[in-house]
Image (cartoon, rainbow, N blue to C red; front, side):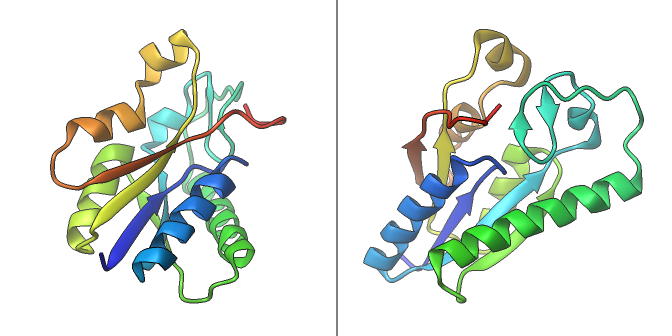
Length: 159
């Protein structure tokens, strides 16, 4: 195994996902790539999604401006940098992707010739599952890349 793509959201549980993926990467002597996908702008205007913190109670009826998207990118980069610092490995690569979460992860994985995709999954309410679906569930349906799923519990303060 040479390259592991670790797709994370910007929630506190992402640290657990990154830590376990990093341990796997070290055991396999693999390169680690941390990615976060900034989803399509319409997604951020839904009543239960916050572009930085993930699912929550964020409500916006405004059209997302380019300034807002730039700030979202900056926040995501800052979060990935904090995780990289937490793992104490300067060789970790970070990348921000844009678009549909599942499609962006799979396209990036193909372009970068990754060997495995690591994601976290945590329980959502039935309404959230029906409205948003599950990124993990959608990735499980693909057959291009092995998938390593790390279960996480909601952490206090996590929406």
